[in-house]
Image (cartoon, rainbow, N blue to C red; front, top):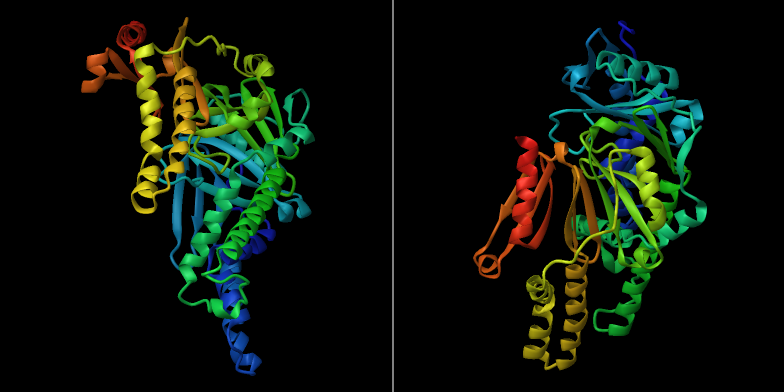
Length: 467
């Protein structure tokens, strides 16, 4: 046990500086300085940039200097803060999970970044981030925490033996090509320019299209989309290269990343449910993705309570792979379609989402061909109806629903925190219900328009467990 105060590796200074530059207005400032009219005096023109760089370096050094940590018998003690010193005691009993990552800077000096998730946190950020500690110290922190919690879930960070699943390069490439991250990149670019559109003189950027030139505008939008798509593909390649899943005792460890290598460990006992997602394009080629709903926070810097187990896997391999990792779960595809009374409700709901577009174009522009948009909407609604379903097998409940992406959630009975059966007035007339299951706070799954007799059977099955 390390009772003395410890500091992070000095490479953390560089990490803090880079973080300041990424989070602050550095890019906007650099862009403004690059395109603004120069005075001819380099001191005046570039002084704001140098001042900001100096501030970032000073803040990075002071953040490293004032950050200390030490492990005591039952908790972790942390001091940090540049101007106001903050002291935190984190009991080991509140720690939900520990994950590791190693970016380019960490790997150059042989250290890792440790993310520590705690119960009761308020944001989708890890409670504690140790930006640069040695691998041995990271192992020591894990051993101390899991020894106190009496959990034998420690695993070597670099141990890759007995890998259950390894993502091949061709699968990584297919995953990257079929990802929808391009829209996220475009949204990020749009958000950036929307923040600084009052300060950036666009007339000096020599933009090649005019507002009244429709063809040039379309070409420009196409170029922006293609650039965003390429950036999204590259980002997914870097993220999912070397993706490996290893099981040791009661621990699942996931390692992934090319430039930034991550190692994420979670206990099997923390897994609340298993979700299988089927996107249209990947499902057409026989691929799905598998996610864990767990009580360990956002260990993968993603959505709280969600962790990617298999980002891309063939449908015929899912059952055996999940059974190897989680023997209590029985994944299957034996879902019966909902009753025919629900079919028209599913189709009408999808029509409501796109009906406004034809109405506007017909009323204002007399473009009746936009009515063709209703055909794919009807098909999507029908597909959602055909794929939706509820199934009980022994001690497991499975709910399947979705619009474009179909999501199937498998839940063990003792993991379900609450089960709700509700009816609207229209559903009462048709003898239908909505089934909602919650496996942890803030994460629930539902299937609408289930036959009320089947919903009642599910509710009685759930109450039988509580009795």
